[in-house]
Image (cartoon, rainbow, N blue to C red):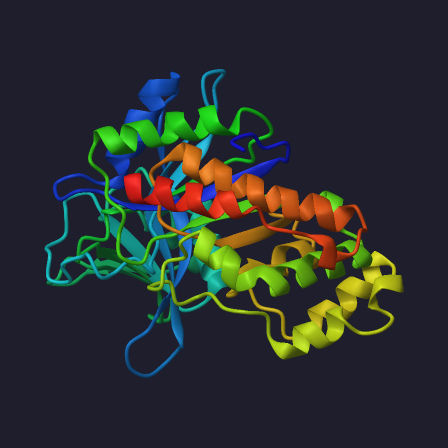
Length: 352
């Protein structure tokens, strides 16, 4: 059950031990596969405390490791949902900072023009000509970029509170040898004593191309709904993960409408896009329905925290079986979960 025949990517949420950062894991993995890590900006929306905009749009520091013949490409980035295991009063580690703006369009502009390899003092300098302004630094070490009229465009701030420690591994899509590729990623994490934080999870992104059919999607959703609680038990879903849950009733009303299975894919997509669909559920359809070319996937979000590649692949293989059953157009009521699988999964999780 540890083989997958579907192109899919993985997101695995970890935490560096005290004294290490996600940069250390990226470097260790790069060395293992004969590659090199490079620093990058990773966009994230962060809730704002107090008034004003609902969120800050931030660019945090991460690392990318290009693929080689020895291993798949991967990114090692922050995940703002990982909080409980961090010391909020921890001082900033030299070299670590974030960029904060109040508009995602500004974040994208800064990502294009600023170099994540630069230090805090210099990182906003390339953006000065764009806005005709200047930068200034306050007593707390934050660097502000203002426009020609003095309005704040962006702030580069030291990264405090241990936020250099969270590490979400995001793999490139893997077509073959999923187990071997994941083991090459996770072996250095275990060797460096990386941890499973309180809020951690594993997400699997299945290539969405074979699923773009209204009847297949209807069968798939019915299977997920019918077996949801059993699947959460098998996958040891982390109760500390808050961005999970069933589909909204408005989504189910659309999917199970009498004529939905007869629709062509563009019509089915249009209905679903107007149904209140959100990514924050157990089985995320947003990327599949929105048709994003860079992430056209079905995302399974309920896999519990894990550092065991075999356990992750075994659970992913279960969902591949569900997807292939949905594609077979057989009656979803005929699908049966294998009882022994749940026992093996629990054993693997307990052992890890």
